[in-house]
Image (cartoon, rainbow, N blue to C red):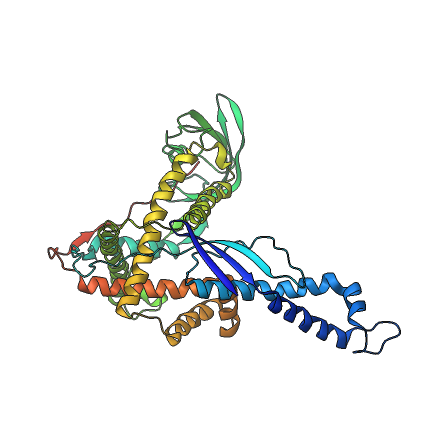
Length: 441
C-alpha cells in the first residue's frame, strides 16, 4: 500500500492511499470463495457454481462486502504509516472500487497539534483556603428544618408570612392577558422572595377563594423579553393556605436526621461545607494555573473540534430556554456574540487539554485500568445497574474515554498544584453562601 501525506493547513493533512490491484483482487477472491460455499443456485451443488455466474448474480453485493472490509483496514494502515493522530473521526469520501484495478482514496484529516513543551513546574499560584462561617452552618441547618416542616390548613384561610400557598394565575399587561403566561396549582412559600419583587407581598392578607390582582414591575433583565421592563399585574386565585411549623433544632431533630446529637449534626454539616469550599479553592487555583500555562502557548488547534464543541454549547444554552417554554431565537440575546465568546472559551480549554496531555506523556502520568474500573463501579452503583452493562454503555457512547481523560487531567493538575509555588499564604476566609439567582415570572 502506498501512502502520501500532504500538509494543507495547520492541524490538517491530506492522505492519499493507493492499494495495489493484487490486494484488491485477493479480497474479491476471498469473498467469492465464501459465497461459493453458501450460495444455492439452480442446477449447481453448493461449492460448484462457476465464478462467472456468481459475478453476474452477486457482483454488487461482493463489491460492497470488499469495500466494507477494505476501507477501514486501508484507513487504519494509512493513519499508522503516516504517523498522524486524528483529532476527530475523518469523513471518509465516496470511493470507487473495481475488481482488477488499484483502489485509491484521499482523506482529509484534522490532526492533534504538534508543539514543544516548555517549562511548566514554575507556575506561581496563590494559595487558597476557605472555611464556612458559623452563620452559614446555621443557615444550612435552617434549610434542613424547613425540609422537615409540617403543613396544616390555616383555619381562617388568610395568607401570612412563611405560609405555603397554592395559586392559579395569569399575567396581564395594560389590561390584556399575555398568552402563555399563566399557571395552575403553583406552590410558593411567602417570604422566600423567590419570585419578582412585590409578588409575594401582594398575596399576604388575602383569603382562600379570593381572586385579586397584584401589580408588579418586571425587571429590565427578566429572562422573558416580552415582559422585561414592563409594568403589569398577576391576576391570582388563592386556592390553599398552609401553615408551616418547623421542628425545634435539638437533639431529637438531629436523631431524626440519623445523628447521635445536635452537635454531631452540626459537625457533619460543617465538614460537608468545608469539602465544598476545598473544592472551590482547588478550582480557583486550577483556573490560575490554566491562565498562566495557556498564556505561554499559541499553537494552532483543529478548527472542526472547536466548531463541534461551540455548537454543542450553543445548543445547550438554547435548550435551557426551550425548557422554560421560550423560543431562544426570540430571546433578548445576541447569539452571534454569544458564539464568539464561547469560541474564545473553547479554544482556551482545548489548548489547555492538549498541554495537560503533553505533560502527562512527559511525566509518565497514567490512568491504570483498575483505577478506571473503580470509577465505573461507582457509576454502576449509583445507577444500580450491573458493572459490565454500564461499562459497555459508557464505551459505546464515548463516555468511558471521556472519563479516562478527565481522570488523567485531574492527576496532571494534582501534579502541577504540588509543584506550584504559593506566592503568599492567605489566612482562612470566613466565606458567605453563594448568592442565589432564582427567577420567577
